[in-house]
Length: 305
Ligand code: NAD
Image 1 (cartoon, rainbow, N blue to C red):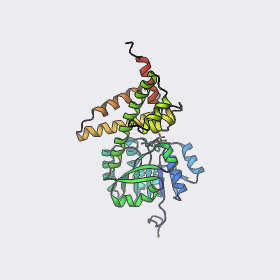
Image 2: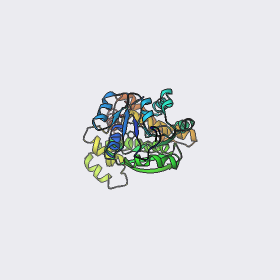
Image 3: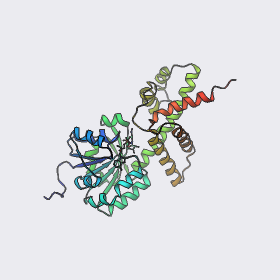
Image 4: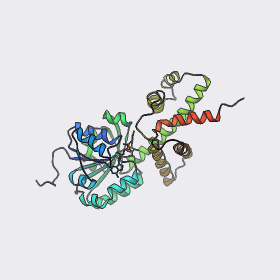
């Protein structure tokens, strides 16, 4: 067998993007026994992978030449496209390689990218995730995988080491579902934050409110996770940036527009989050939206009636 023939052993996995999600995901692959090679523009992130038993690639082209499966955890479709269509990267790809975009990307752009890659004998699967940094660390991610069943079967052992995988349909379907999920998540986080301000202004204890809401029909991921773990303690450190949440909401709104589905609430969510994003720090955590809603309510003030 030559160096370039696919081996029957565990595939060599390349991970591009070792940020808040990519690093814990890569570390879980190492723990599961995969040979992991990472690439990132940050040398500090590469150092952390090396310390945990992974290897560093100096360039994404080097990584492409050494990996059977290439996993992307990059900020958005723009960065994904620039990495995956870079001539040196494409020239180094080996036929039979499967690229798995675990970023929260735009479904229509993912489809286009998949078609372009197929011309090079390379397959694509989209496998975005939900659960945040905590679930990434604990290997308990919800993974929404789109693509051909045969391609998914190749990468399934890698994804199974990271959480629970659901095949959502054709390429791009995982990215569509992820955008839809985050549209809901952003909408109920804003709504929950307004509701908490209302209760507090009435004189209710926020902790009591959350206990009751979580046993009632008003509960959501915002009341069960975001508010008790990151907002009420005042840490605002979920590890998911507000700019990334806004990107996901915009992806969902654009999708509704492209398909021709009305999205009145979605547009409202987009404009509210965009306003907050303009007013908060560029690196603000998405849970800081609660601070924004609270400050907004204080500046408007209660109705003097
Ligand atoms: P992050 O900003 O922490 O990480 C992105 C990483 O990509 C950084 O380490 C950055 O240096 C690297 N990078 C950027 N451009 C690069 C390039 N051209 N080449 C190589 N590396 C490059 O983001 P994150 O929070 O890890 O999110 C990654 C993706 O996962 C995003 O699409 C996000 O929407 C999605 N996501 C995040 C969370 C979360 O809780 N953080 C949850 C679900 C999904």
